[in-house]
Length: 539
Image: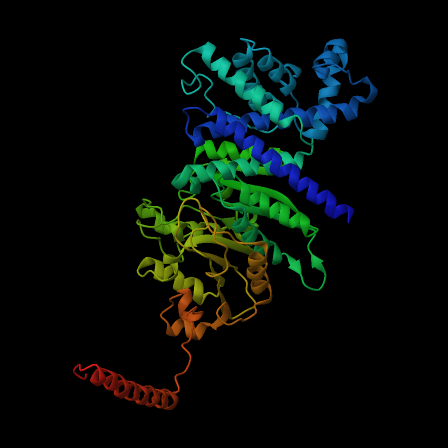
């Protein structure tokens, strides 16, 4: 009962915090578009998180020596200059980062509160310090897309400084009354990413996968890391999202794994968009993932330009226990002549220029471990289109690599209203059929997007887990039947949602029609009698 009440209060506090933060964003962004203001807002929230977490850890280490001042760490460092290096070394060991006291949030906020003209320059220096000196691993360019000299903030230094004073002061005033629970701040960060995605329309697909869909993919790939007899594995060595956007899908896998009693050794992601790449790195750190526990690479997945993945020695080649992805749908790409010899595509053929869907799929599948599971979101066209895509699909089916096809409802994404599918792949399967799940009717209608409830998500995941067959929902289809259908995987061929018309009793209908006709004749005789009494012509 106490736990339920605590959860309820936490949920209420989260919703209040979410509403307050969005109100800050909506009120202060002025003439900026939502996705422009997003970068400023989220970077400031990230900086506040690092600072609060840093001071919390420092308070533990310093104990009663922690000063009671507006900027306690600056006070302590000034009074204990000889011990600062040892203190920073201890902070680096425990938190994996350090921050110069003058760049901590409480000092930044004080400059904003007092309308100091030094705020903008101090904030710029703080961003550079965090990028280049705070972390032992390279986080260079983390704030590269945050242009504090942009005219979007103001026409000159003074107006830009005033705008930042207003944003930072308002942000802190809305945050200070809430819990210091960093999980809440992590959730708030995810909430803001989702809200900005909702306001970004078509651009949202570049950086955000709705949490409800992330949960399906995450639960599927960790399910297969579990032994039904002994429960969950203690760990997954690695998980990859090669089109990771803001990193929310990777974080969802981590969360689901930890809730099942396990953990992930290392998180890997790749992202082509520089702004979104930076967002993903901040998102990892803000959710408590240490810089040594993740690696996000800025680069093009289709050209496979990540050196880490191109190790020529087979014994050193990296393979992942879980691969998840929500790549851009039907992206046009430009494969070269030599692309056909690329190890990722050599055994399958190259996806057509008009749609890179199978190029993304084969990239992830190539780096999947022999015992791993891959779940990828793609448009329905990959299930039935001909040409090169049919050849790739046929090869995957003949090799028994496609484990399950899940059809989702339409209008779940911010970036598109079309229905999409999840394809689950494995290199070593125990089943000789393909499970089809037609979840097109599992949703609640929302104002802008349709919504999958927890019950809908459980239905989909449990159907996959137990490979259950349910009329109008799921069916295991033999390879022979798929072969007879020309390797077409269109879901409705195998799990139709069409309602069967009830049988018609022709004899009963005939009897009913005779009765109706008899009553018509009787009524006509009566009617004509009335007409005759009135001196009118009969009908």
